[in-house]
Structures are given as structure tokens and as C-alpha cells.
Image (cartoon, helix red, strand yellow):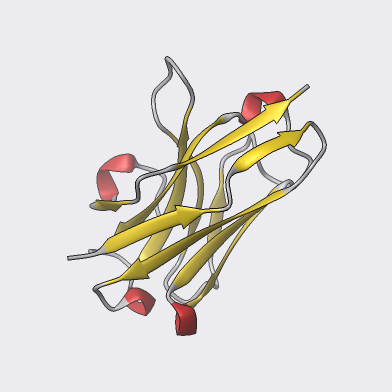
Length: 125
């Protein structure tokens, strides 16, 4: 089993920054791709960013490209999402997820079989 715990969410003004962390335990973290997703009220969960097992390959949704950066520290079993130039439309619950079947991240929620509990990010205008 895998446990994922997100942290770092909060309230920030538009234009500000936050750094989310996701700590993993229970599995060989460095073998697996990780993803970040978000879900706003009344909307479906959507892909935000993904990172390969080594950290060498990253994917981003068009809406966050150039503003968000995914990274990971395999020695600490932790993945990060640095969010800059935040906008009110970035407000959502953010989730990290692990794909136990692949080292390369994908954008589909169906690929990820372990999820964290989520952390709220609220961006005020």
C-alpha cells in the first residue's frame, strides 16, 4: 500500500506563490510517476502536472504551463509543486497521485491508483 500526504496549501492573493508537497510512504517511490491534479467546486478533477520517476520528464496542463513547476526528491520520497503567479481560477483542492504501473507520467486520472487526501488552495482577487 501507498500513503500520500499533501501539505502546503492555503490562502494567497493573486500573483502570489505557494509550494505544495506530497510525502509518500509504503512503496518504492523512485520507481513511479507522480501526478498533480485539482478539483474546483462543481467541476471534474483535472490534470495539472506530472513528473517521471527520475524527475527528468515533466508534463503540464496548458493552463499552468510557465507558472507551475513539478519536482521531486526521491531521497525524501517527496514530490513538489511550485505554483507562481497564482490566479483566482487556480482555486481548488489539489491532489497528488502515484502511478504504480508506470515510470512516465500521463494526464489521465485513470492511470493513477493511489491518491492523497488533498490540500485546499484559495487564490483571492
